[in-house]
Image 1 (spheres, rainbow, N blue to C red):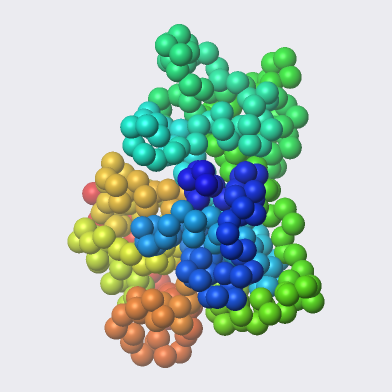
Image 2 (image 1 turned 45 degrees about the horizontal axis):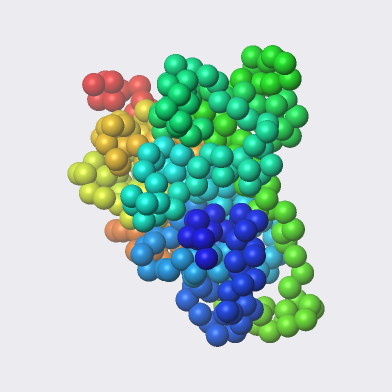
Length: 386
Ligand code: SF4
C-alpha cells in the first residue's frame, strides 16, 4: 500500500487500496478492530476541533489510518445530521491542507527520510488541475526550474510565491463567502488565467478536498445489505458523536464582545494561566481556550498577547493558525465545548457557584459580564498596550 494513502485517504488510489485490503471496513466494524477507534477519533476531533489528525499518530499503523476513513464515513452517515457531514468534510480538508503545505515545503524525499510526501504535481493531478495551474516564473522559480527543481507550492517559501490558475477551475473552487479578495474583479486576470498567491492556491486545494470528501455523504447504511448490523455495532460511538454535536448546537447564541479576563469562568482562567506559564496544553485544552477567546471576538494579536506567546515560537504559530481557522469560520462552526465535554476531558477546574447555574463556559461569561455592569475591555487597558 502506498503510505501516502494513510495521510490522504480520500485520494482515488486509496479507494483501490481499501478494496485490496485483506479485510473489509464492514468486517473491521464487526470485529471492533483498532481502525474503528481511530475512525471514531477522526469524527470526534472533526466535530469538536476542526481537525482529523490523530492525537497520538504513532498509536496507529498506516493500514489502520487508511481503513479508518471509510469507517468514519459510515459513522458520519449514521449521525444523520447535515451539520455532521459539513463539519467532517471541512475538518478533513483543513487537515489535508496542513499536510499538503508541510509536504510541499519539505525539500527531502522518500529516499532520504523513509516518508512518502505528496508533491504539488501529485495533488494537482489528483484533482484534474494539472493543466489548470502553472507557477509564476519568479526569480526563485526560474532558478529552481533551471536546476530541474519541482513545481513547489504551499506556504513553505521554497516554491514560487504566485501561480496562474485557469478561470474555470478558479470560479468552480473559490467561494463567494471567502471575501472581496476572491472576487474576480479584484484579481489580476490575463489570457483566461487568474493570478493567486501560493497561500490562496492552498485554499483552493482545500476546497477541492472538502468537495471530494462531502461527495456521496451521507449514504444509506440502515436497511442496506448488512447495514443494520453495522449500525448496531456502531451504536454507542454514534450516540457519543451525536451528543457532541448537540453540545455544540446548544451553545448560548448571545455573543459577548467585551474581554474581561478576570470574569472568565474558572476553567478558562486556569487555561490562560497555564498557557502564560509556558505549559504545553493538550490539543483539546488548547482548542477549548482558543475557541473561547475567538468567540469573544479576539483576534490573533489579542490572543497572543493574552497568552503571552510569541508568534515566532512553535506554540505561538500553532495558536495563530487555530485563531485564523476559527475566525475564518466566524467562530460559530466550532464554538468552545460545553461544561459536560470539558468535564469529560478533565479541563473543568475549580467550578464555583455560578457554574452550578450554567452548562456552557460562554453562558458563565455572559452572565458574569451582565452582573458586573460597567466593565472595561482588557484590549483598551494600559496593561494590554504594554
Ligand atoms: S462548570 Fe463549566 S464554566 Fe465552570 S469551570 Fe467547569 S467547564 Fe468551566
